[in-house]
Image 1 (cartoon, rainbow, N blue to C red):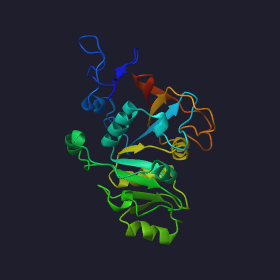
Image 2 (image 1 turned 30 degrees about the vertical axis):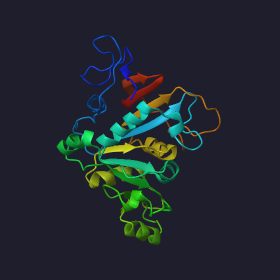
Image 3 (image 1 turned 90 degrees about the vertical axis):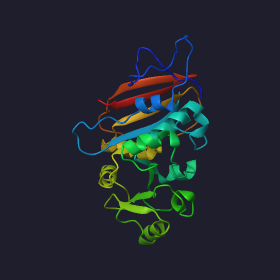
Length: 267
């Protein structure tokens, strides 16, 4: 793990001091410190869930290279990626992202086991796949051997044979729309109805754009990769634009070897 340290004058939202050690040298952030810095907010009386997105973008706005996010990521980015997953009740991803990134079941991690037990969470987060067509490979480990049963979010008009195939594979099908597709706000409500309030979406760009347009995104964790790719790669959010740009407030900022790890919350 490379070192992470706060970028002044922005202070991470944690009371623990990380970054430069007593001798002035940078030191690694522990997993406990990362978990504290990225902790979900305490309930503020607002019913429902807290929906957080985690995305990576190059300096010129590319969310992928050759269709995948891994080439523009880093070891520290993956460490934060794992921390965010370990704090969530459920990880939401679009079907195309699941296919392109080769999604596997989220695994339970000993480093976060006690934290999850104390929060009343399952040993690992569930994966929720958003798909209108349900054209998914149900023979993959994501469906056949998850730690927690995989969820499939779809619309009421989805093909009955595909719903049956998903259920035979052990997935739990959740209807979150009246037509073929999924309504973002109903997807959030459906997950809350299953007891999931700490929500994390990893995109892709089309799904994140839908959450943004629906006004249900509470927080964006954005890694800015110090790379330039040019080309026509997607941005982190796609689809129709919002009528009025929504402002988010910077909550924390970390840096490691040119990678910036920012966290923005709804203003």
